Structures are given as C-alpha cells and as structure tokens.
Length: 253
DNA sequence: AAGAATAGCAACCGCACGAGT
DNA sequence: TACTCGTGCGGTTGCTATTCT
Image (cartoon, rainbow, N blue to C red; front, top):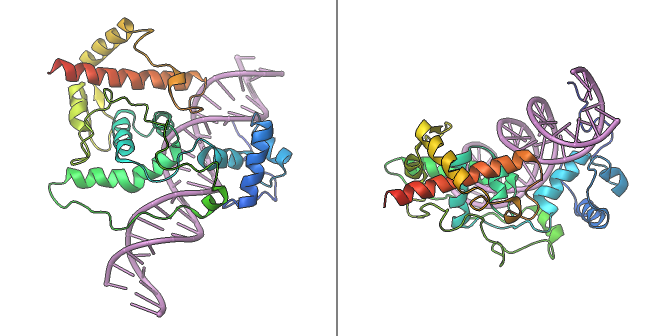
C-alpha cells in the first residue's frame, strides 16, 4: 500500500510551534473538538498538517497533561511497566495519567535506561551530572489553565500499591527479580520470556477473575484509552502480568 | 570567557492497523 | 475482497540548554 506523505501539500509549516499556533489549535479544539485531524488545520487556519496538530495536542496542549519532573513513583512505574511491556510507550502512558507516550519515551531514554545500566553495575553510581532543565520554551505560551503542577491532586498512578512491585528508590529497581517470580526471565534489552507454567497459571486465573479482576478502560487515564480492541487487549495483558506478579509474590510469603 | 561536549526534549517520519466504501 | 483514508504508535532526528574543560 503506497500512501502519500501526510504533508504532501507545499507550504505547510514545520518545526517548533509558536504560542499563536498553540492558542489557535487549543481554541479550535475546545470549540469544535478533533473529530478529523486531517481537516482540522484547514478549519482552524493553521499551516500545519493534521498529524503535526494531533501530536502537538496530545503531547503538549491537552489540558490534562501533567507537566514537570517525573516523581520517583512514576519513574518506578515506568521501569516496571517497561520490564513487562517493552517499548509499548502508549500502553505505559495509559497507566500514568497525565503523561504522554512521547514524554515517557524520552524519560526512559534519557534517565531510566541509564539508571538501570548504572545500577546493574557493581559500583559507580552515576549521579546526575546536570540539574533539572527549565521547561521548554513553548511551554510559556501555556502558562495558566493548561499547566499543572508536577503532582496535581486527584491524579495518581493507575498502579495500586498492591500492584506496584517493590519501589525502593535505594536500588531503584527490583523488577528483574519480581519478574523471575512470575516465571519471566528478564534481561535489559531483550523481551522477557514466559514459560508454560506461567501461562497456564495466569490464564486460569484470568478466567477465574473475569469480570471482577480485570480493569476496564474507564479506570485508566482520561482519554488515553481508545475504544480500539488493541488497547483493550493490551490493558488486559498488563493487568494479567500484574496480577500474576502479585499471585506469585503472595505464594512465596 | 569561550568553545566543545553532552543531555534533554519537541517534533518528524514511516509503518501498521482498523474502519469505511 | 480490495482499496483508501484517518489515526496511532514507536523510532529517530535535530535543536537548544547546560555543563565541562
């Protein structure tokens, strides 16, 4: 299937968004919604492609975006979820209300991956060389209703304390051992592997707990879960892994 | 103080999927 | 059934800020 590039029309602007463009986009979406991203820039009078508008909205302009540094709780959650899901950033983001897949992806590549790498080494704790950077330039255009403090009340991780595996920030990481408990073997860069006993146990469990044990989309982030079956399916597996982890942990007590 | 090196992050690109026709 | 369209996702790039020398 050969498709034309999304920005096939000449004259469409690229690069960083200006405050004016941000305001135009936000105003248009607040008034008309975003039922059709491709038509939206034209309707809003923006010289951007729909894809760019969508990205800007999802990653930056959405009112429920939580900005600011990631808390250690969030970072631990990302580490755990990444250990289970791999690079399924959107699924991970669905578990972290107010955080976007792009943001999580960036945090993973810039902070967490290095943290894991350094913690896996016997010595040489890599202390952060740089202090936190100030917010991005374009963020200044959005000061006010859209910018939230880093930890706004009412927003919390979707991972319950029970689901959350050890979140010791001293080591910062205990997922590998936890996954071993679930029957998964995890190495830093490879997909973890699952043995048959794990599947038989977890699948049996999921049947037992169907209808009650499984979370549904409305417990996740506000708009992060689309009705698509793909997402629901992924959420199903996330829940499954977490429940399996809990079960295994409990059984060892 | 200036230039180089590095880190952080916003944005782009291409592919895949589902829905509609 | 085959095709198109719109959307979402993950990988990657490139600019800017910050730190180091």
